[in-house]
Image 1 (cartoon, rainbow, N blue to C red):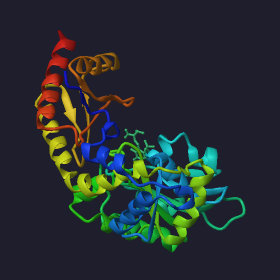
Image 2 (image 1 turned 180 degrees about the horizontal axis):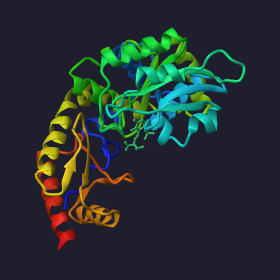
Image 3 (image 1 turned 135 degrees about the horizontal axis):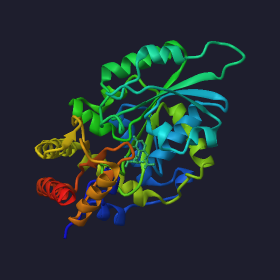
Length: 347
Ligand code: TLP
């Protein structure tokens, strides 16, 4: 039985072209800046995102941490959404490892932070307060139904932050999904921010790696932050080679995953008792109107028995994420499996 794994787009296997590129990759010691494949990926990335420079890191979590360590000193404060990955899912790394305190403000349903809330959270110059150094946005917003933040919103938030002397970082783990969802160039979404992290290892299919981008000066400093968290990776061109294929071959087709997520939502919505959140990119949340948590756990099990994997969420919602390895047939099989899972749990 072919497993349909929609728990996340992090589960994506590398494509045959990636494996080939990895096999053939020319490598060197990247801590000395001598890995030609990493250098090429960093250069390509910077150009593609409209930033001066880029840095290859091991993961999204490391990329966000490296960016925050570079922007902030110990004791500084970061304004961040209360549902942001950097706040909820990174073990409080900014505080634990960087001595940086998060100031969480409510994420709106569309993933944004209200400009009034940002403004109120910015500290005045007072010896009692930490210094507000950074605003952190997330695009697309994982926990807010995969919502993309528009270029207009990002520009407004960045303008406000800059007026008050703050820098702006975007956790753009899925920034190519955001660009595809809004049908804009990824540069438009990033032109007003100081740094961005995006992942090669999610919808872009690479096995490992994320990129941090910003000004040349910022990235030179980020090199130091990466080293101190143990992220200097030597002959990692074998990994970067897959990243190059990801940018060249996978990023341009990512909108297909959104079409399939919409089809999945449409199919699930026809099943009595299933509610789906509006699909805005490749992330779909759905839930049962009348099932207790035990029944929900059972549904996840019943789906798994049919080879369909989704994430059972703590807040009573399920998450299914479409990606390169989820084709039209997989979507139809998943809808069918859901119908059966519900029937079985009810009978
Ligand atoms: N997200 C994972 C889980 O950690 C929840 C997933 O399956 O969605 N920023 C955002 C917005 C993310 O969604 C993730 C991973 C990260 C950062 C961290 O990336 P990694 O897993 O590479 O450290």
